[in-house]
Image (tube, rainbow, N blue to C red; front, top):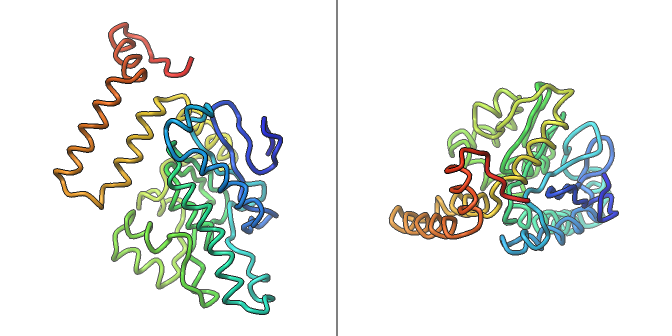
Length: 266
């Protein structure tokens, strides 16, 4: 992956920022890549920062045959102080994942092959997930005697419900693409051969949309389980008012009146 930045890890393609956090055919987490991606995504924490950089979506990409097989288990086993080593990897992963979740624009991932362990955590943290018929996800942590990281025990219950999350995690259940769609983990089903192209097209479509409005939607959804109804209604009222007063709302209303598609970016 390359682009205007010249980095093989973070590259801007039009209004899409494409990032890679894995390496190798299996797609193990790559420490230096995660650090670079975390730094890039922390610069997208607000709508103003995203607008300044001309970015409307983030796509999590990969180079290998699998989306992400998780951490490098061989390096865990080889570490002199395994607890300290795994904690260091988890902390780095969490720095990147928090920046990914908190970025102000929509995130997209095309999940080819396996997403296991940390790979499943990345899937659960993504806004729009594209899968193919051969896609499979699995917690995988119990298989090596570990508990989850990457927010899996926080995101999974919020998506599938606490009871189903218990079963998936405790039984180390493998979920198919069909399972992911029915549970709300995945959003789009594509042919395996078209999965990468569909993920890119999805990211591009979102990036051409009303970035500020989509960012406000992300913020509202993130607060769903933290607010009572009255507080959330007030947040929605403030958000829709800001949208109506801004340039995207102006363009959207003008386009509606003129019976044409809106042009939010140029």
